[in-house]
Structures are given as C-alpha cells and as structure tokens.
Image (cartoon, rainbow, N blue to C red):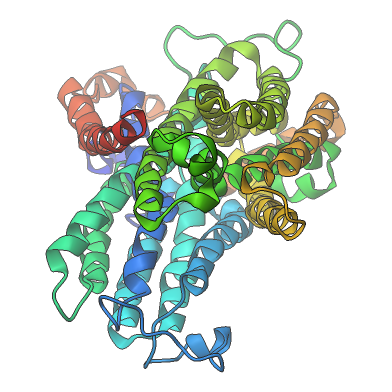
Length: 561
C-alpha cells in the first residue's frame, strides 16, 4: 500500500536484518501517515470475528444430526465431549471457545507486549495472521473429525494468541503517528475490532448456506474459506505497517511545552517492567475492568432481556397475553426476530462509540471522558428498571444503546489514556498488560448477570423483573470505576526511564533517525506517498466495513417494523 519501501533507501539506510524486522518498515520522509490506519483496520476487522463466532454454535450443535442434534447421554460430561465422536456438542460447551478467545487475548497481549515493541508491528501482525487463520484451519479439521479439543486448541488457544498480538500490534505505532490525535487514531483501529463481526457473521452465514448439504452443515468449509480470506487481508495489513523515524512529528504540529501542557500528559516514558508497581496502572486497570464488566454483562444478555421484559408487546400484544410466559412457539419466534434486530442495533452503537468517544477524548481529556462514561452510564443502568416497569421500549432501547457506545468507547480510549500517563515508548506493551482487565471482566460481567438472573428466577420473581437488582449491581461497579478514575494522578518522575535507559530501550526497539539525515533532502522528496495508494488502502477496508454495516442495518429494520 505504501510507496515507501526498504529497497528505495540509499545504501547508508539499508537495513541489514530480515524482511519482517522493524528496521525494514521505518518510513522515509514524505510518507503519508493516513496509510497506517487502514493497515491496522485490515487486521482488526479480521480478528474482530471473535465477537461473531456464536453464528457457528447452532450449526455445530447439529454437526452430526444435521436437522436435529444427536444428544449425548447423561454420562458424557465436558471432558468426554472433548473427544466424543458419536453425539453432538452442546451450545454451552461450544461457548467455552468464546471464553478462551478473550482469556487468551488478555494473557498473550500481556506476555508478548514487550516483545512486540522491539520486534515491531509487521512481525507481530504476521504472527497474528498465522495464529488466527491457522487456528481456524485446525478448527476445520476438528469439525471434520468431530473432535472438540481441536476446535478449542485451534481457534480458542492458538487463535486467541493471534487475537492478542493482532489487537495490540498497531497501538504503539498509531499513537506515534498521531501524537496530535491519539484518541482518534486508536479509535479508528479498535473500531475495526468492534466491526469485525458485522462483516464476518453475515459472511459466515452465507458461506454455510452455500456449503450445506443433506449430510453436512457446511461449517468446516466455511472455516477454510474465511481463514484464507482473512490471511490475505491480515498479511496485507501487516506488510503495510510503517513506523515513524525517531523524533518524527506531524508537519506544522508543535508538542505543548511541559510547563504549559496538560498535566495528565507526561513528557517522560515508563518501562513496561515497572508498571506492576505503579498505583496509576492498577487504577486504570480497575477503570477498564469495571467499565467492561458492566458493558459485557449487558451485551451478552441484551436480546433475552428485551424479550423477557417486553414479551408480546414487541409484536403488538397487550395485557396478560403479552407476558413472556404466555407466548406460544410462533409468538416466541416472532419476538426473537425483533430481538435479533435489537442486537444488531446495539452492535452499531458499539462500533460507533469506539470512534466517536475516543475522538472526543482528544478534546475532553481521557480522565474526563471516563468520568462521563461512569456518571452517564450509571444513570442509564439505573433507568432500565423504571423504563421496564413503565413499558417504555424507547427509553429502554435508548439507555442500552448509550451504554454499549460507552462500552466500545472505553476500549478505544484506554490506549491513549496509557500513552498520556506512561509515555509512548512502551505503550503497546503496557496496553498488553492492561488487557488482563478485559480477560477478568469477560468472566466477571457475564457471571454476575447470569447468576443474578437465575437467583431472581429461583425466588419466583416475574421474568420482567429479574434484571432489576442486576442493573443496580452494575451501577455499583461503575461507582467503583468512577472512584478509581478520580484517584488517577500524573506519574511520579521517579518511575520514568533515565536518558540512558531510554536510549538503550530505543536501541533495542530499533528506533532509527530519519532517512533524510542520511539520504539528503533530495532523496526525501522522492518518497512522497502517492494519494492513489491512500484511496485504495481505505477502499480495501472501507468497502467490506460498509457492506457489514449495510447488512446489520437490514437486521435493525426488523426491530423498527
């Protein structure tokens, strides 16, 4: 995608290391920084399919029976299901792949974030592509052999490692390319992760329909095709990454002096190995964990919550006949279709919130943006029981949509928050460690919502009231997050790397001086990026994303009919 390639460098600037090395991707003067976000989006739109993997659960639960599941006997527990070949897997068993995705994402990002900073985004992107797509191919074999352990190891574990590396691969690079708009830059990439399922889910549904036969549900072939398509896009993104030269800054932009700039934006740099012992890291960890726990709890239950609270009123019924427990099978199917449109609507707010809130944080400041998340979010959660009791679908849906926009916004804003506090030198590695908060929230949020729902049902509460206490618990989580956010202060200077330590870290990270210093001004002029490449790069990611939004929009229309 770029006209800046290592082969065009003068002899003095030629790197001596391999094709995937960081030295190979140092941009020459004249490189257009707007070529970097599409590279990040190409990777994030592919790995974002992790959110849409539930589209495979129902077909996989009938992989042997095809029309009806061949149920396992009571003697077949989870461990037996890993290897069983004569009966179908339960949907609840398949859901463990989803858990593995996000636990492995957080763990791999934390473990290899430091390596990524030194190896560079190209190498990390290639490894992510091999893991994510290789995992899907292994899952395809697992479906053909009917071995669930292969799906769990393939997509869950190996794919989860690819998720972690792919997710954080562009963070540090984008922040360095856009020091003037850190929030917007990371928001663009992380928006892609939220939008990946919008493209992947309808694509998978179409492929399964195409490959399905009277004896095959078509999942294995779908895995193979998607793995190959994703590999092309992810490799394109990885190979298109460029990193800015040392001390590069946007033309016409001057960093604010330390004494007059925002006190929350540091001028120093913290080494990743020190962050475990810095209070601000743990405060931001709790900020992310509480925001995600509350949001992920709702995102997983939004569809059943809408159906159980409003029941037959979603299809025009009223009175006792509209109660969820009074509906017949046909009516339940009808409201499930409406709820699917609602799920599509909130996914649009999830992806939109990632870009809008992160961009807004450049104006408001990261700390104030999270204050808005927690205060406005608490008001929205607290309003849900009242809007449910009043039977107001509009207020209920509005509250959930705002909540989901801030759930996505929290993910997209936090990398810039970390760069402000800890500096940009190792922000990708620090972000990787912070993602352990996501792994924690991925367990905490759904557990709280699901178990509270079951507990309330056990007490005999009507279905339309079983979520009330849960909403107030989530308000409490946001209150904890708000307190932690308010306690965040600028980092003490004692935690910053000294000039010598920073110089050594830059050497290990292969940070290089500008090519112009070696090649001269005349050489720099030859590397101005062709605007056509920028247009093509954005089209390559923009067209699939627009198609995904269009398909999601079609689903949303079911909700408004």
